[in-house]
Length: 212
Ligand code: SF4
Ligand code: SF4
Image (cartoon, rainbow, N blue to C red; front, side, top):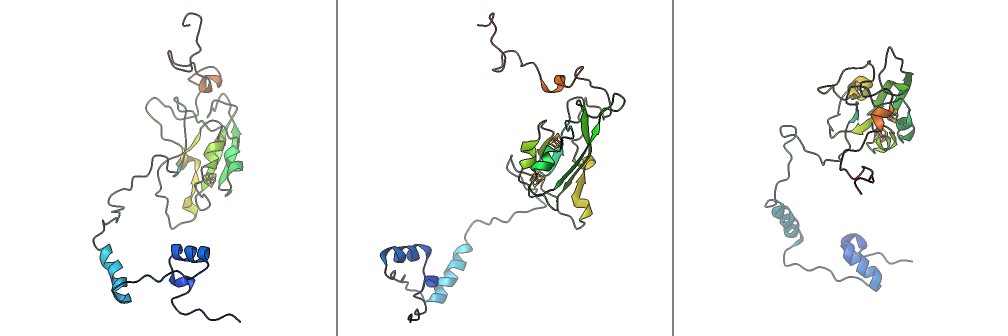
């Protein structure tokens, strides 16, 4: 029959290092000695905290600045002429481990063109009740349509309003952009949107006989 462990001599009364050392040496670690009684040692910890630097955040009065690569709310991006980068391929939805994305693709026509390719994202939703902000969806996106912003202010008391629609996720129109639907402005086919000539002198520019 096992002898009962005396109070204060068990693993619960030792620090991690003492327990580890005791296990390694096969014997009991020496008890830590202090001139102060136990209540004095406890209040000493509290007293020492009073002189530490205060780390209280003044949010929301002072907005919190996140790290540059923080995974926040998603954005559906646009091409420089305003057409949507999303081609409705659903790869983001298939990559999502939380089943948080819903996409329905639609066909572009010459009368109603929303993206340079054959198809566009007609319906796009992200359910922020499910999203775990892992970023797998943006890795899966072949057109860099889907990216994540630094916006973390997503709390709400209404479940329905946490299902973001395409209109909420679309990037705003910048100067020079035109709201779709409209014709392709950057070239005759979608290659003009994805295959660009490298800038002169850049590392991507092929070395020609004249330059060599
Ligand atoms: S960040 Fe992760 S969980 Fe959220 S929508 Fe993308 S893949 Fe799904
Ligand atoms: S956001 Fe990207 S991956 Fe998702 S449907 Fe659109 S193009 Fe495809």
